[in-house]
Each structure stands twice: as structure tokens, then as C-alpha cells.
Image (cartoon, rainbow, N blue to C red; front, side):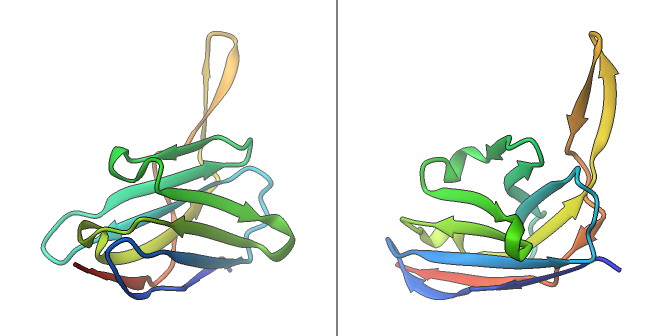
Length: 129
């Protein structure tokens, strides 16, 4: 059974930093997509950062240059380093994982990360001005 458990959230002032951690257990597929999402009450959940098993990473524009996603395979943990935090970053943050989809095109397989089947319960991040 795949389980994801987030930690590291908290309250910080604008300009501060936090590092979120997500311990992933039970996931044995060498191919993976992992990501961080966030949600504010009354708004849709949005993707923040993604990392793929081949090392590819992606960030939403508003966090580029401030957030860094990484994974330590030795301890099965996904991280999100968040620097220069802004009040607009306040949200519940969730980590997610999935094998992703392989799509054939132009003679190669593309590893697509667009849907996630495994989710953690979230950790709250609050940034005050």
C-alpha cells in the first residue's frame, strides 16, 4: 500500500523559508512522477512543482526561482525547499505520486505526468506579511 506523509509546514513571515518533506512508502515502481500541490479554501488545487524519474522538473511560474523540488531515493523522501515566501504562498500543501503515462510518438515513448493517484493528507503553510 502506497502512503505519503507530509511534514515541515508552519507559520513564517514574508521572506522566510520552509522545507517541506514527504515520506513515500510502498511505492516500488522505478518510473515515477512526484509533485507538490497546494490549495486554499474555496479555490481549486494547483500544481506547484513536479519531478520525474528521469530528473525532469517543472514549476509553476509564480514559484520559479524561489522553490526547489528534489527527491532523496535513499530515504524515500520528496522535498520542497521554499525560499522568499510570500503571503500568496499560504495554503495547504500536498505531495502526490504516480507512475505516469507512457505515450508513443515520433518513434519514442514520452513519460507524461498529468494525473496523480496517490496523495498525502497535507501540511499547512502560513506566510504573514
